[in-house]
Picture 1: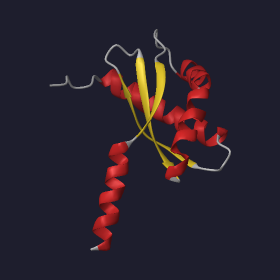
Picture 2: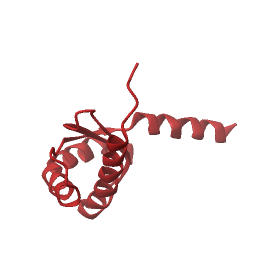
Picture 3: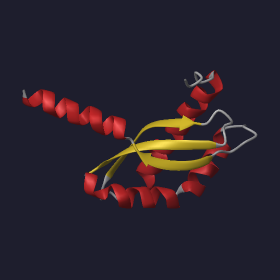
Length: 111
């Protein structure tokens, strides 16, 4: 069983979401819509995964590659906005939970 997240973890996850969303929106070229759905940070605060959804789905791979190239920018913004001793390593993943939720909603609207 996983240990509940600390208040510090929750706060940092929220800060990452607040930083990543506008940064991604500003940097994208407009060919796809990239939305930050959530962030998850490890208990030691050394790794942070930013979960995203991408529209259209066919652009997911190129969006992930783009975001991985933008890691230094996210790291720089994170350092500017926080006073943490550790700056986490940022990674990006497709939020399959959000994808499943959208699929369920789509199916339920058809019935």
